Length: 289
View 1 (cartoon, rainbow, N blue to C red):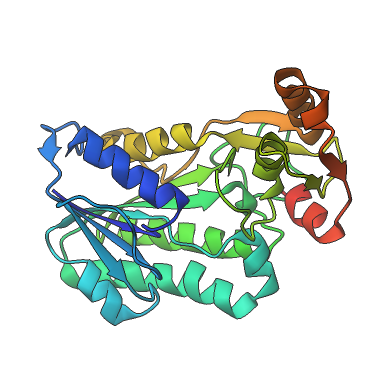
View 2 (view 1 turned 135 degrees about the vertical axis):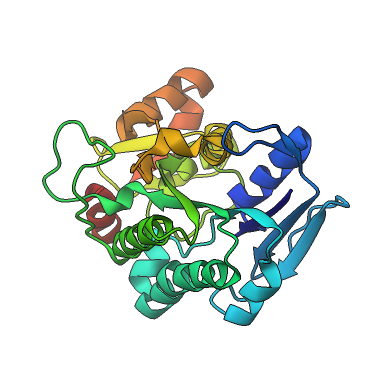
């Protein structure tokens, strides 16, 4: 089986590829597990993953020529992870539209032209919700994004649903909570602090929390995210019925509860490295989810 991961050089993309290589097989629609013979990792930079089953593709995902190189009739499953994150999409409207929306449509058009109906797993976000939400947010709760990022994700969800309805692809939307704790450097996501207020203090560095202590977050671990992506891909099509989007499970916590958990585990000296400095832009974006 040949698999494509867009955003394959990124944090989740690399971990997903490693887990798939470790498993060695993937099963679609309850069928016999098929050996994974090739994983293509498409990103703007070359992925550093050494395995004879891996092909690293460097290019612009919004370029149809790049997509034609990455997708062929042997591509059975596509994990579409590539995206411009929330804060960056808000700061650069054109870039967010080109990567989060235009590239998603170009990917779907490439699949439609080939006519082989691959399984497409699209990572969406809780940012598609917003406004006056009910106490319990369901898969079918009305979308009301309050940011460019959320709007782009919501439109891409609808596109994937229609391409699936028309039989061009077999699409599934997995709405990710905020992934925490991410290793490495902070990124431009508005929710980047959800990792930073844990990661930096543990590394002996100061961290700034730009939202109020009572701001509630919906979190999922990196390991849980990878497990969910694979499970979503392997889920039988009959079990999906007409439910293209699925809200992934997560843990609901406040920023204060995260800081307190850090204090209980690592001690006062570590937890005191967090400072609370409100950033209206971040509060507006995160508060709308």
